[in-house]
Length: 481
Image: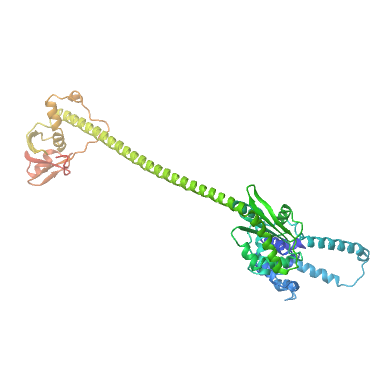
C-alpha cells in the first residue's frame, strides 16, 4: 500500500515526504501526504502545522487535510492507501467464519508483544528513527528548529543551522565553546528540557558570541553519530566542548536531566554546567583566541599586501601592454609610411620611364612636323611653340607636354634607361594625365585625346595657329609650389 502512495509522487515530493516523516516520526503516509499537500509541499510549514495541532486531535487532521468523507465518491486528494484501507475495513465487516485466524492468533499475539517491547525500548532510548537513511542533515537541523519554535516559542539559544561536523569546524575556526544538546522528543524529560532551553537566562547566556550551540534529535543520523562521539550515556544530554591547541575537547557533560527543580532549576543547572568549563578554560581560550586573532590579522595583512602587490603588477602590466601597443602602432605607422614612400618612388620611376618611352614614340612619328603652329603655355609659365602635322591627334599634344622634362634631359645627354629607341613603357603601368589643354578665346577644353588635332581646333578658328594653355587638374599644395 505504501508503494501505491509513493507511486503517485515525483522525486521532489518523495523527498519532502521523507523529510516530514523523519522530523515528525509519522508512520501514516496518507496523513503525511495530506498535510504536505495542504501546505503546497512546503516541509517547514507542514511540520509547523502538525505540531501546532494538539496530540489528541491529530487523528482528525487527516480528514481535514485530505477532505475525506465529503462525498460518496473517492475525494480527489485521497491517496490510494486510504481507499485500500477502506476496502479492507469493508471486507472485515462481512459475516463469515475462517479457521486460519483462529489458529494463528497466538502467533500474532506473540509478535505484537515483541514489537511493543522493542518499540518501548526504542522510545526510552530515543533512538526510534536511527535506522532511517537518506535524510539531509541540514534539513534535520532546520526541522528541529521548526519543531522547537512551534512547541516552545521563539526564545531559545541561537541553534546552529548545519551538521554537527560543521558546528565543530566553526567552533575550532573561531575558538568558541561548542554546546551540543542531544535531544530525544520521545523521552519523558524532553518537555522539561525544552522549557529549560527556552528559559530567558539560558537563552541570554548561550546567545553570547563565545558559544556555538548545536542541537539535534537523537533519532536523526547526525545526532545519533554525535551521541556516540560524545559518549552520551542517557538522553537528553548536554555536552560542552572547549577549544584547545589540538582542537575541541570534552569539558563537561550532563547525561539525563533532573525534574526536581522544574524548568527553572534545570535552566540554572544548564548555565552552571556551561559556566564551569568557561571559568576553567577561559584564560587559555582567551590566549588562543588572541593568538588566532593575531594570526588572522597577519593573514589579512598578507592578503592586503598581496592584493596591493598584485594590483601594482596589474598596473605595471597594463602600462607595459599600453606601451607595447603604442610601439606596435608606431612601428606599423613607420612600415606603412615606408611602404607608401616605396610605392610612390616606384610610381615616380615608372612615370619617368613612361615619359621617356613616350618621347621615343614621338620621335619615331612625323606628328611634330607640319603646317600647324601651337603656342603652348606650360604649368611653370614657360611658353613653347611647336609645329604639328595635320594628321596629328590631340594625344600627340598631350604627350609633347608630358615629355618636356625627359626631352631636356635627353638633350643634356642623360640616358637613364639606355638608348632612347630601346626604351619601353613599364609593364602594368597606366599613365594618368594631370592637366588639360584649354583655349582661352574662345574658352574650349580639349579632352578627347583620340580626336584629330585639326578636326578639334578648326571648328573654333584655331587651325593652323592657336594658343593653348596647360591647366592642372588639381590645385597645387604648398609643398608643390
